[in-house]
Image 1: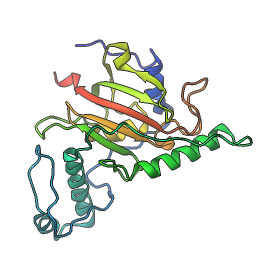
Image 2: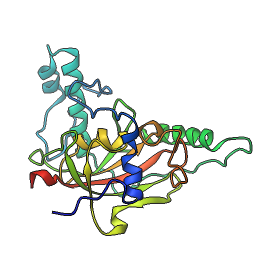
Image 3: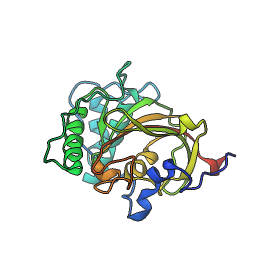
Image 4: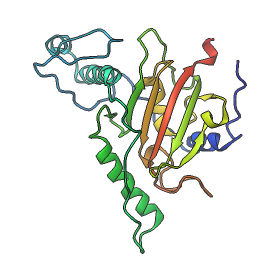
Length: 242
């Protein structure tokens, strides 16, 4: 088993462990109210890794469910759709930020750019939203037999993080070694995303400031206050189950 990285050993740990300073939100549970999904007459094509289900069959299945259970079923359907969505060779993101105003603080400027970016990005192919505002795109999907981590479980991942200008502030790929850490001692966007992922999957996460480092950023850099973050995240394994 790979040696577990100390949480304070590198910028990677600084970037991912900062939520230890505050309570991280719980991962999306089955009862979380998700965004609505079109369940009209047309059959929605799901991932080939998942069972097919027509809109009519879906409506029949959720009829009579409680509001909470129905919302959870809609979210799970949307997640299956995300696993089947093909976006081709689109870049991670494409965003040209305006110049910062002379009297505009760094925090105000970054916050405005984050809001504009996420608003535009939500309209891009295969980008989905969770109720918290976390955006994700599934680059490589895995089948339902592949496990997902539970809150607090150690995970082994490869990842790379970027700012909106494309500058990379941290990367396990660049270090040539995956990272391991408990899945509940990370920034809020990761805490939410990891229980939704399956081992073997690769996702792109588009993280709003409040799900990352908020107005504090990382003192001294590399993440400025109110910055939106873009992560490629690959779930390689669950060490405690191996």
